[in-house]
Image (cartoon, rainbow, N blue to C red; front, side, top):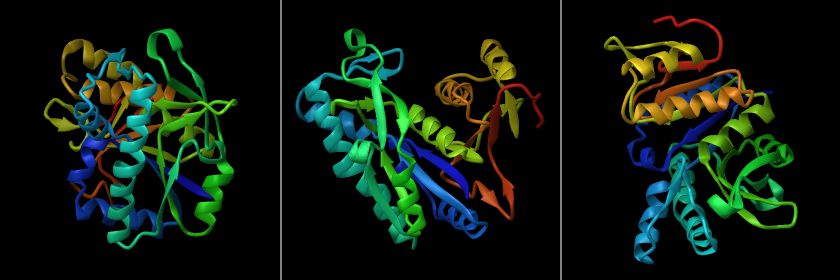
Length: 257
């Protein structure tokens, strides 16, 4: 089977266009099996605010105590996951929500309990769950909550979760869906960027602001063994007539524009 893993951040869900779903349909028609992994930062922050809990981050990762973990689960499962599943269903896709801890789908371990609390990194992906869903012609939509061998749930960064799922499935592409068309260099979208050139453009200031964490997440994914990551927009057709629109990030090959 040919797989594509699609990571949608929680902040981009409300901006997904009908053209985005047309691209999803085109990929399916070409025989790709799709897996969605989603974030949920805005929904989690909104619930934390209701409980008067201030969010804290360490090196871009949400510091997670037991109460924050429970709130993150409620937000991700009860709101963000349902939102994305319902959007796919409204566009005539068979989608099914999967909690990352169910059936040890995303088996994880602590990154640093002292610094981050209940935050994990994936050590094993249970591909059987994905295959069961996809063999039934369902698109799995996965929450980034992992589980340890002894049953403790852990908060997982959605970019990292998508990268591990893509690597384990040997996916042909891992897509990071954003609200921009790709990475702009000299005023136009670069079709591809190597790891070396991404770092150089950050240093020169060509890549700046909110694009920096996006490309750094993509680099983290290729460092984990994913062949390449596409940064694409959820507001346009990112795949049309067999052609990709966005920026491909990979490790060694040179830039082409």
